[in-house]
Amino acid sequence: MLSRIRKFSNTIYAKIFLFIVAIPFVFWGMGDLFNAGNQNTIVKISNEKISAQEFMNFVNLRANSDEVKDDGKIDNLLSKFIGEKLIEREIEDFNIKISDDSLRNLIINEKIFKKGNNFSRIKYEKFLVENSIDAITFENNMKMQEEKKQLFDLIGGGLLPTNFLINLSFNKINQKRYVEIINLNEAVKNNLKFTNLDIENYYKENIKNFSKNYKTFKILELNPKNLTADEEFTDLYFKKIDEIDDLIADEKKIKFIIKKYNLVESKNVSINKLGLDENNKKIKNLPMGVVDKIFNLSKEESTALIENKGKYFVFEFIKNKEIQRMVVEPSVKDEILEKLKRQKKGKIITDIINKINNNNFSKVDFKNFANEKKLLIKKTKLESQNDNKDFNQELLNQIYMYPEKRVIVVADLGLSKSYLIFIDKIENVTINKESNDYNKFSNLTKVSLMSGIYNTYDLFLKNKYEIDINYQTLERIKNLVK
Image (cartoon, rainbow, N blue to C red; front, top):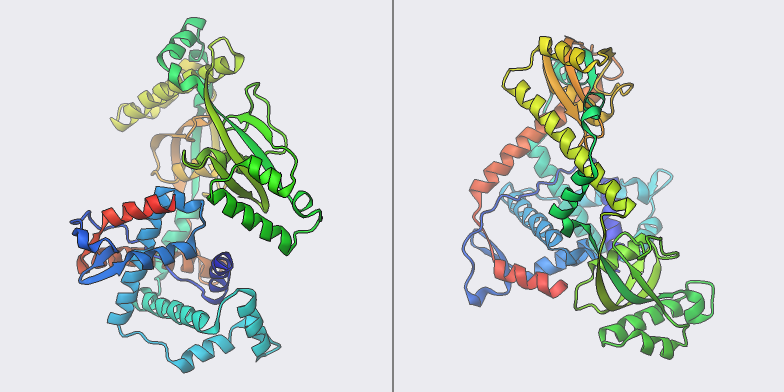
């Protein structure tokens, strides 16, 4: 039922409401831990204590059992939970209320509940049944979402960006740029030659990075045919899946499950986190989603029921094994060579960037660099920030951050693409009100202005409310859900 409610919250709200801004509210300080007598309190907002149970209810509606095993996910959910609580307080402070008549009008005018031009009670009731939610819960949720919308409209609504600001937004994306380009990959390729000694030294210095952990385990796929002798996913199949889940919770092993349900023997598998066996071969019929979940299981979960894309597997841990990869292996050599090249390339590019930042790399140096390395300087015109004939979007965004008459370096994260660029000229452009794109850029400008207002509002709330988190209770919750 919870999964259906989660599905509901991700679909109907998106359809009903045009734009609700979510504020992360990650600004609270550490605060003093509560006394031992407050172990059931997760957070205190000013004078109001919020129970751990209320937070757990919030978690159950917004994350599955695998997601909550990640401490970072719990922290993120707590951030959202506190944000929701602050929004509720602000709604109350601004005396924002949705009357029963207003709520009724919202529901009967929702398109998904209409048949023709009229509200259909049958479609409304069918929606509630399909999403396993009662009318009171749905209407309360809808009321809360509308109150949030009105709160954010109160804070950032009514903004009308000026023609000047709209043109700034338009020009930022659509200005023309005349640039000169030197491919740094070509410039450094002669410096990327390494000896066997270089490779061996790197291996010795980083030997721990060249070991692989292999998990050996038994695994058994559960499907309708082997559980119920039926090809279809029936209620009986899911009933038996639930039974097996309960047996695992009672610490029963695969051998017991196989005997009880008359199943074929499980397979013994040994793989690393890439899903490869000790011979570096892919294990057939073992999805990477299952592999990822196996390697994310805690030490206590020696036997587990794993679901992946509607398929179920029983997993039983046997042993861990660390295998040291040797420098003579071709895959290890190739990996080291790639790392050495990236290191060398990174150093060369960093040296150039340092010179640019210290104003020691001018247009004259740009030309001298090309002559010294015997490289071609390519001249091109960029029609907009989306003109990808020479660069991908990541590099284009970097180029459009700088003014004209500047020498810059742009590169992707892996340094597979890196360029030295001189921005020779920028042609600014404008948009008139009759343009088909004028409304689009008006909306983009409005969103940008609203973002600034919401950031200011975020700071305001930081000072308005005193927030103390009970980290002992938070840690207890994290341990509980693992």
